[in-house]
Length: 114
Ligand code: FES
Image 1 (cartoon, rainbow, N blue to C red):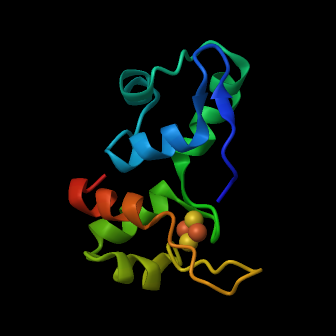
Image 2 (cartoon, rainbow, N blue to C red):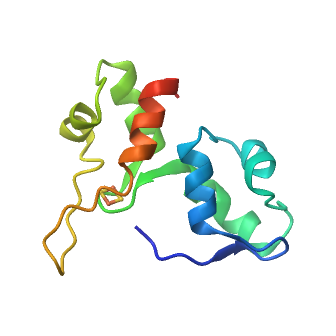
Image 3 (cartoon, protein in one colour):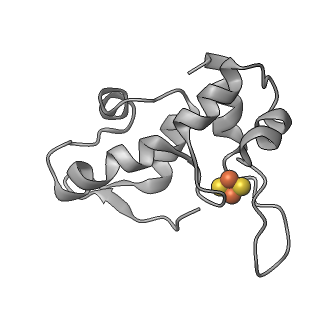
């Protein structure tokens, strides 16, 4: 997962705030505007919001589309989504510990079905 940094420079909204909004159900730029206050006009918003929204697991490079597809095909737990897509199964290369940072988002996708 990427380190935290400001994405929306106009309204000072950082990456982790955007990911937190996604874990709360935001799947579109309009929903991010509502939940985080991103402006949609600055360079970070124009160039990065779409990519952030389309990604679930940075460790395994798994997209939202792939996770939604797995859920709609019966993966009804975070573990099952991981077995099908690899999402949520990343390991910190330095410590050898499980990452798991995307598991909250995976659970939210299961809960909402989108
Ligand atoms: S972001 Fe690290 S396991 Fe998904």
